[in-house]
Structures are given as structure tokens and as C-alpha cells.
Length: 59
Image (cartoon, rainbow, N blue to C red; front, side):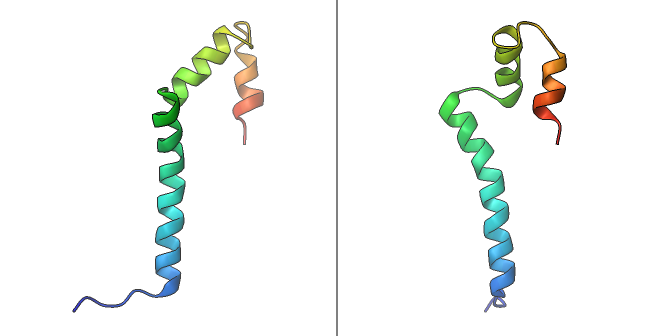
């Protein structure tokens, strides 16, 4: 019989799955990877201004 996992381990595992699955769900829903979304903004609302990426993507 496999060892029981603690609730903390299970919760951590669930948090990791959510953090991974959310970006994947966005890719599936939009059909675009994050780089393509940035390129779309560069050619669209940013009007070729690459400085905007630093403002928008800095954390």
C-alpha cells in the first residue's frame, strides 16, 4: 500500500497543477502562445513601441 500524503503535500500539489494548467488553458482557449500575444500587441496597441513591453511585463 502506498504511503499516505499529508494534506499539506496534496494542497501544494493542487496549487502547482493550477499554476501550470491556467496558462495552458489560456493557450488552448486563445490559440496563441504568450509570445504571439506580445507580438500582436507590439503590432497593434503598442504601435511598434518596444518600451511598452518593459512597462507591461515587469514584475
